[in-house]
Length: 231
Image (tube, rainbow, N blue to C red; front, top):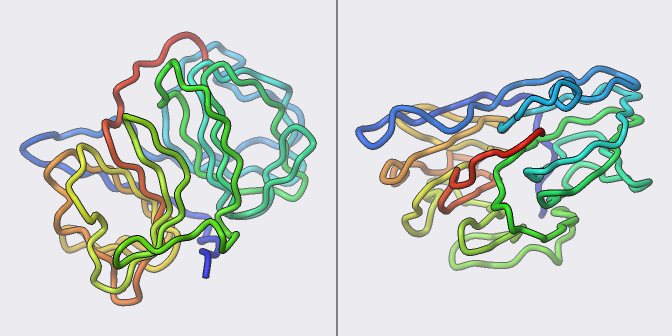
């Protein structure tokens, strides 16, 4: 079946190797204030490029604001709303550079959000429910829910069997969030909510744990696009 919502945690893991000793951005736990205050970074005109878990408190309601660098969201729990539409846990939203929205959450929500990590000419709007069984397909020895793809990156959810490698083939860059089960990497168990970003050449030993794993996975030339302007 399709994945269930993970616990509201996000633990950062950043690979270090001879190829790279840093990652582009570290996942950060954010608690978003209730009712009415615009995002602080947007108010201040700060350029934000991040991958983060945001905890939206019940009654959160923000003024409309722009995303010149684009925004990508996976709803982990609760319900995220925008434009008069509700997106419960399992929904994937991708808004291109230049998009504008007024987000809210009446019941509260936990989301994985990525800001300013899209190519400037991207124009795709994506709104899809990963819990719809029709979205999932068999891809070799794994199950896959495709979310987005272009020449630079591929985004999907993967359901892996116990011991199955995270990647079926090498990739220039890898980013993953564990939604269910666990990944095993460098002797560490990365359970639900764990975040992983790896440079090229360091991912061959990342496998699903003894109970398997469901993960958000992004592969490709990650971090090519420099932020411009305000959030």
